Image (cartoon, rainbow, N blue to C red; front, side, top):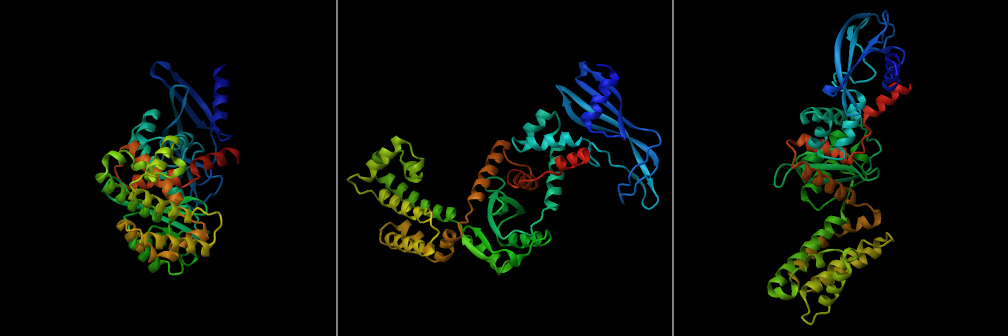
Amino acid sequence: MSLKEMEKLFEMALGLGDDWYVSDIAFAPEEGRLDISIDFERGMRFTCPECGREGCPVHDTVKRTWRHLNFFQFETYIHARVPRATCEKCGVHQVQVPWARSGSGFTLLFESLAMALVKLMPVRAAARILNMWSTRLWRIIHHHVDAEEASLDLSGVVHVGVDETSSRKGHNYITVFADLDTKRVVFVAEGKGADTLEKFKEFLESHGGHADKIELFSCDMSAAFTAGIQKHFRKSEIVYDRFHVTKLVQEALDEICRGERRELPDLLRKTRYIWLRNPENLSDKQHLRLEELRRAKYGLKSARAWSLKEFFRNIFNRDSQDMRWGEHLFDRWYFWATHSRLEPMIKVAKTLKKHKSRILRSIETGLSNGLMEGLNSLIQAAKAKARGFSSLKSLKAICYLVGGKLELGITRLWWLTHTG
């Protein structure tokens, strides 16, 4: 292939169109590097980047370099004289090149690859693959996440899930808000508690939404969340998430099991997860062991508590979203739990009784924080792989990446630029 043919090939690959052309290609295999020089035809006129006026003459040029996708194993760089155009209205401004965003040292396709990688692996690992400093990669991430966050349209949000997570164990917290209908993260606030609801209201209303249009919040039984919703979203209904509520019953079961294991260590050794796991997740061997314990002559407290846990869990497992039937089952469970002589179960039953209507509404609406639980698992996994994040800003960005379903503008912009 001749040099001219190679230049034409790269022009097509880069989508340069009629305004730009490849003027030179320098290949240095010993350095593992490919340099592509791009130029524009003499006498070319450009569009003003400020007002969109066409036919602006070139005032002068500035030499720029961008990192591009590797050509096989070779790092590739694009060099160009970028013109500054004179607009009668706006003055002199640098024009926008079609292969990179303004102010970036990377091409759009390189940034698109980088953003795809950080969705799949820790930022440090992605930076090693791309052979760049992780701080530069974080700048790319923050730019595109911030841009997507700013462009969110929240006018259709009516059902919201809210949950909190820590940046590190025992450290600072963030609160995540998600649209339960589209199943995506829409806002991440630093901190936890009632103040985050005020921040969410401000963000919502600055992105086309309105507090009065939010019909329902799904959350845990946090008094702070409840107070914040009642103060800032007065027309919204609060539904206590079934996963958090069931977790309270499981914690009561675990407390009972721990106490009984101390009394019967030989019989109950290594049985904790048999009691706590859902039956459908047990192995055949664990099922047999569970049945043996339930039939044991000792009349185990753990077995009685396990039956209470399973009965409570089944209140929410019905295919029919029948509020009256759910209330009937709840009342039966409450009577059983309060007469079980199991103090942890009695305590949690009385707590849940106070909030019965908000708990049972999750049956009728069919909404829950299952999305939030799944998202929290992804966030925790990302934190574990990255061994924590250096700042809350970075953790917030990861939340948007793993749960925001972001349609990153770098990909959209590249296709719009190259397909018209």
